Image (cartoon, rainbow, N blue to C red; front, top):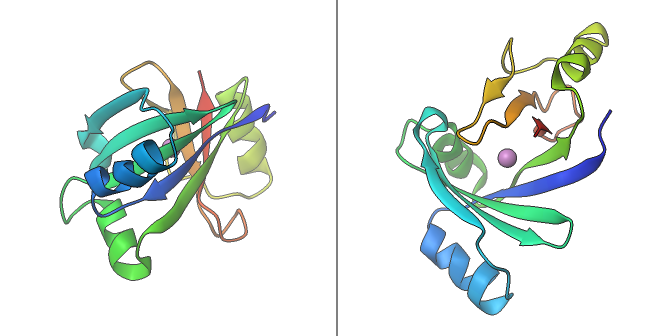
Length: 132
Ligand code: CO
C-alpha cells in the first residue's frame, strides 16, 4: 500500500511568479517542467529531499485547475502517495466504497500510472496515487 508521499501539488495562477518564490527565494530546484494537455495544465516539479512540490498552472479556462483557482484561489490542490501496485490499490479502494476519478489508471508521459481519488472519499483532500 502507500509507501511514501511522492508530491504535494499547489495550484497557481502564474508559474513564473510561483517559481520566483519556490525556486529563487526558497531555493528548490526545478527537476521537470512540461505541459500536460490531457490534464489542461503546465506542471513544474521541485524535489525537496524525499518528497517533491508540484506547481500546477492551468493551460486554459476549461482546465479543472482553472475552475479550482476561480473557486478557491491559489493553494493546496492535491497530495500524491506512491504505491507499489496501483491496480491492487484501486481495487481495495473501490471495495471500500471510495470514488475514483477514472476507471483505469491513467498513464503519464514518463510511464507513471496514476489515479485521483475524489475529495469526498478522502475527507476533503484530492488524493493522487502514483505507481512508478
Ligand atoms: Co500530482
